[in-house]
Structures are given as C-alpha cells and as structure tokens.
Amino acid sequence: MNTNKTTNFLTLGVDTHLDNHVAVLVNSIGQVIDTNDFKVNSSGYEKLYNWCKSFGSVKQAGLEGTGTYGAGLCKFLQERQIEVFEVNRPNRAIRRLRGKSDPTDAENAARSVLSKESTAIPKSHDGIVEAMRYLVVARKSSVKAKTQAINQIRALLVTAPEQIREKCYLPSSYQCVSACKELEAEPDNLLEDTLISMLNLLSLRWEALAEELKTIDKQLKKLTSSAASSLLEQYGVGSYVAATLLVAAGDNPERLRKESSFAALCGVSPLDASSGKKQRHRLNRGGARDANNALWTVALIRMRSDFRTRKYVEKRSSEGKSNKEIQRCLKRYIARELYPIIVSDLSKLS
Image (cartoon, helix red, strand yellow):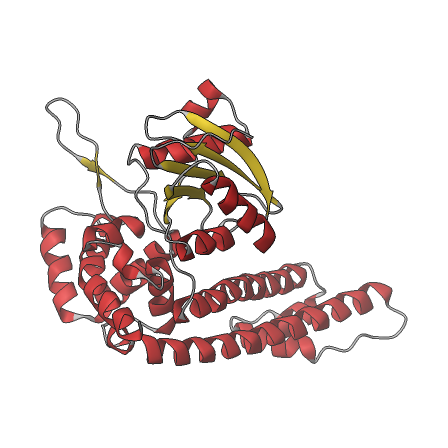
C-alpha cells in the first residue's frame, strides 16, 4: 500500500455489493490513488475508513445503492462527517465503450461526485417513513399474491364441470371464494376431487391474504395519521397514497431543495425535447413509479368528484387535450401542491 499522503482532499467511490464493497480513492485532479475491497460489516467499514485516512482527508463519497447494499456504509460514513452522494449506474453507452468491472464502477462513482454530476443526497432510512416503507413493500406483494389467487381460481373454474362453474363463477371475488370453500367432491372421482381440493386451497389463500392486507392497512393508517395528518386532509389522499409519497420523499425531505425536485423524483416533470425550430416537451418515464402512480390516483379521484378539478378538465378538453394529457398536467400540479405539506409534516417529526 502506498503510504504517501496527498495534500489535497480525496473523493471516495464505492461499488456496493452484498458481501464485498469495492472502493477507489481519487484526488482533486482526478488521479486514482488506490483501489481496495472490504467486507460488508462493521469491521469492514472500519478498515475502509482507516484505509482512506492513510492517504489523506476524505470529505465526500459517491455510493451506488445507498438504499440497498450500500445503506450500512452510507450511514457509517455520514456519522464520520463524510458527505455522501447517491450515484446512478453509468449509462449503457459509456459501459460499452469502457467495459464493466467493480473497480471501474467505483472509479466512475468517485469521478461523478468530483465533477459535481452526482449531487443527490441519500435518504436517511432512520425514522417513521422507513417503517412505512416496510409496510408498503409488504402490501405490494400481498396485493399481487391476492390478485394471482383469484385469477387462478377463475382460470380453474373456466374449464370446470358445468355444475361447479355455475355455482362458483360469480362476479364478486368474495362470493366466488365463499362458494369455492363450500364445494365437496364426490367419492371415486379423481379429477373432480383434485379440482375441488385446489379451489379450496386457493380460496383459503385468498382469505388469508385479505386478512393480511387488513392488518397492513390498519398499521399504515396509524402511522400516516401520526406522521402526516395535514397530508391526509388533502382531497383524494388516503393512507396508502400518503405513505407512498412519504416513502419517495424519505425521512429527510430537506434533501429535495424545491418542489421541482420532488416532481422529478415522482416522474411528473416534463422533459425538454426541443430541436431546431420545434419546441416541445416529452413524458418523463423516470422517477419513482410508485409515487407517480400515487399522484395518478389522486388526479383520478379529483377528476371524478372534485368541482375545481372538473372545471379544469372541461377547460383543457375544450382546448383539445386528451384525458391522458390532462392527467399528466394534473399530476404535476398535485406534486407542486403536496410537496410543501409533505416537508412541513415531516419536519415536525425531526
């Protein structure tokens, strides 16, 4: 290891993984000082920090995956007064030209921070919003599994014997599941016995998932009521929508310096796509898609039953705008309206 300390401040870049992190140190003029890898645990973080200090003063770091594999290291570095920035993966064009390796990715992370290309501050993941994230993640999988269960029940009923199909294939999911639970197979009929046993099993699964969702929703309502009462008062914002937007903002929403940053985070800020004499904007397909969907839910509810929004829809429709275009405009306005409320609610918790 090189023991000569540089007099300039150093920038740390880390390519994070499940078991090992690969780190690169770059000086203020972009020269690579050293590369090393460290275990993903407290001891490994200490070794990484001491390794950095052996070369000089590290004031900033760029990490990939600060919300996943790099969450522990991110918190460790922040506690030692090192400014950490979230780094996105290099685009595919650059990777095709330069190749792909862990040291290369770590070096790119350091250079992107050094050149001020990466300026995103990571979420803190240390408050009530992180608890909401756990519930939102579990809820998404429960909803998906519940939908799959009823779809599988209906798929089996489509090809079931007529007497079973007529009894169980009902419009209401609850009625369909209840009917399937009451089925009893005739003895010595292997085909029907197997079908009914599977319908019974899937019905029990659907009911268990329905109860699971009730439990999650109850906890979500409790958390959002205590953390974001003002947000819940806004038209069309329920506990799940509120939790989704809060998770997108994070426990430290001050990292989003203005409402346009929040709009970009939610993927509702139109992107400039002008060329030559043609001036236009295109749809933003980036950002947190869950948050984008939450804003779409609010827009849809308001379009249906909010007088102010209905007047706006009528006006834009008369101008020739389609429903999708109106929804995109509404999502942008709603993000602008909700951003200061989200910041205000979360600032009360800190």
